[in-house]
Image 1 (cartoon, rainbow, N blue to C red):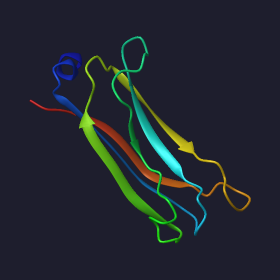
Image 2: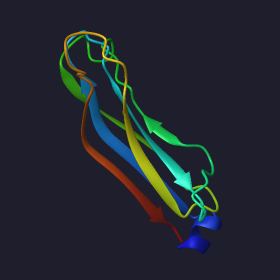
Image 3: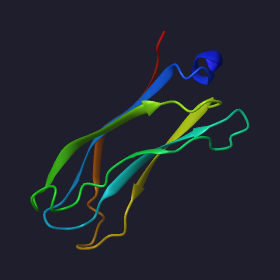
Length: 108
């Protein structure tokens, strides 16, 4: 698929349910970083999150977050990383993530 990616005919989709506990600001961000054949980052990383307590109405819940875009030319792989922020309350980090998805689609 290298020629398809380099021709700008591939898109990515990153999604997941992100959230947290009550009014605590503990949160998670999910980032996809595209890499060339040598493992060097190319293009701009894609990210979803965080979901803040205000976005959740200070409730314990998950909210769907997603992003899509073109796969950068020369990309040959990607790493997807979850980063849990600093614990802001309680005794554990209550940033939540579930049903994470990352995919690449080639168009014609």
